[in-house]
Image 1 (tube, rainbow, N blue to C red):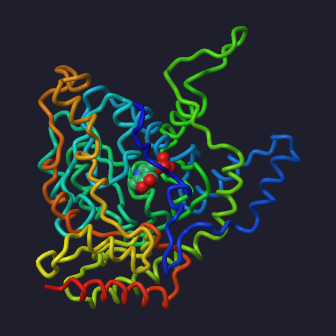
Image 2: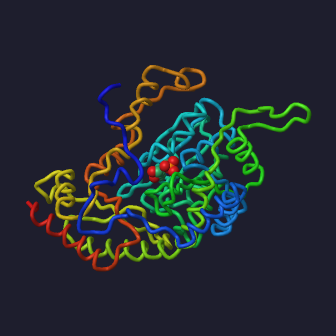
Length: 414
Ligand SMILES: Cc1ncc(COP(=O)(O)O)c(C=O)c1O
């Protein structure tokens, strides 16, 4: 359609963001990146950088398998295919997330069922998931939004009681820890993103992590080999509809280099997000996202806080705009993360009974919209975030950010 503004992505979407605080771009790249890239060129493309990255990342996570992909969207799409979901299966998923979380569910003609968030936070919980379980529920896909890990143990218990599969979208929580266990190793499998904006920003990259040997084999077969096998005397035979979602070797070179500096960067993010939360928590009427006690390392991708709209004579959008003008780059609201509202095509498909919302394979009527997850919707009305929070923050930046928040709060206080 002529004239429509396309969604932007990567470093380009951050152009023009200026302020008084550090921003992720230009990013620090691990010191050995050029060495790895040069090896690819000098080897005439024979160096197996993707394989090396897969091995190194699996070891760093402590899992048996890493399957590298060009992003988390493809990683989760391959997982949905490898799990063997059937059309019309219901997958319970966090409502506050990125479209990449649900794309694979949709590609397999499954039905995303959005569980509401637990009050006061960005994630769903066992309590919000349980009422949605039906005879068609197949899996639970947990997103650790902003880096805050879902309270996984009760979710795993609930899933166990109903025979459901659990998998994770660990995009925003790389090397974060839940009760001493690493995000992405908490359930059956996980998808990660190494897109340029993410904490382990590399390029357009991602991966699957799992301990399940059979699942890993299926994921490689469907995700890397396009569902093709070699038949002697014939050649490739495609036994299944697969994808060519291999991580490019050059991305793998950068990922490998980033892996060498990521732990230091995550430790810095953890320390700074806790300091920032403490300082901003002192401003009356402003509540940083609560950091649950079960969180070990908080690998925070973005910073977020709620404002008490009753205390201020402005909307959250106006408050955020003033923060951005006062020097916090990319401060803004985050309503677009509410998937049942943002995915207008799902609203249309469900309303029209378009496949898979036709019956069968759907077993009941579905609808999506503003009030699908009322707690999440209300929460986002007063939630402000900045996705430019990064490992470059030092204590003086946290102090400056808190001062800016405090000044804007005082200027708008009723
Ligand atoms: C929670 C979440 N899931 C999925 C994705 C998609 O990841 P990718 O861009 O690597 O496909 C993102 C990226 O923004 C994300 O934040």
